[in-house]
Amino acid sequence: MHDNIAPIKNISPDLLQNLKGVLFDIDDTFTTHGRIPACSLSALWDLKNGGLKVISVTGRPAGWCDHIARMWPVDGVVGENGAFYFWFDEKERKLKKRFLDTDSVRAEKRQRLLKVRDEILAAVPGCALASDQHYREADLAIDYCEDVPPLGSEAVEQICSLFEAHGATCKVSSIHVNGWFGEYDKLGMAKRFMTERFGLDLDAEKGSFAYCGDSPNDEPMFQYFLMSVAVKNVLKFVNQMQTLPVYITSLEGGEGFAEFARHILKHRHKA
Image 1 (cartoon, rainbow, N blue to C red):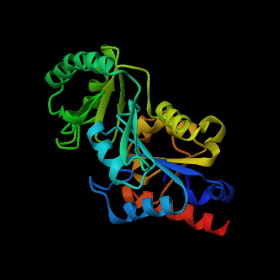
Image 2 (cartoon, rainbow, N blue to C red):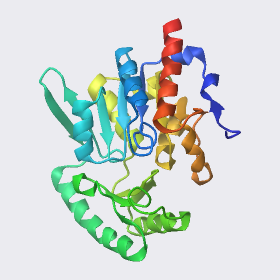
Image 3 (tube, rainbow, N blue to C red):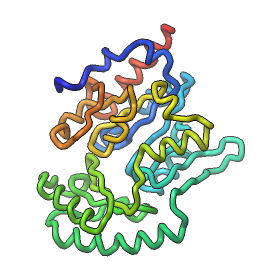
Image 4 (cartoon, helix red, strand yellow):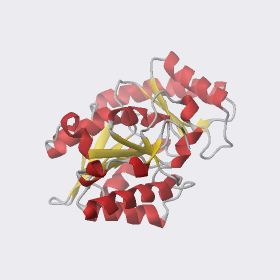
């Protein structure tokens, strides 16, 4: 483990007993080696059925988020690193979408990203357009280890530099480098989701929510939440991160997510 990250057993029982919800990343947090293990999906249902709000917060594309909001036991999903949130309206039986930018602004930004895409693919041998790019509305995802042989840190840094040279924001996940035009991030859209969907001021209530993630693009969330938790595989990235999570699980990926969920529910049941 890392000296500056405490095990989840150190989380105050009071925090756990008063918890209202869990926000969580998907890739390598909820999944293990690209698959959803039975334990993490079961844990998500347990959290939902236990009366907690559950919100997935991901860099994955709008197309995936449509499925997640409809099919998973979640209250909503923040996608493409904060470009939007989707939720399924149970009363109307209809998927609802909330984008930060208008259709025309998103279209203009996508055109600008095409030039960035071409430069990165030409300049960084071995990288590729992410296989889910066709389902994206707002960002550009460059694959550095999901469907291509893993690239080293120098290549990842070069991809980031090319994004930044165009004035784009970029974040490194466990599988992709995502870039977009705009100042939004996972945290900003999570706050907006809570306010607009539940009338909840997350700044005032952040002690009642937990976040679980695994990589550098989760840093705004790790910095913000009092109960910021990473699954064990975050240790691969700690040397690249400015802000570390407060707590860490003993297991990796989806198994770590399930471990955290069990820990939450054990203490809530004692309340």
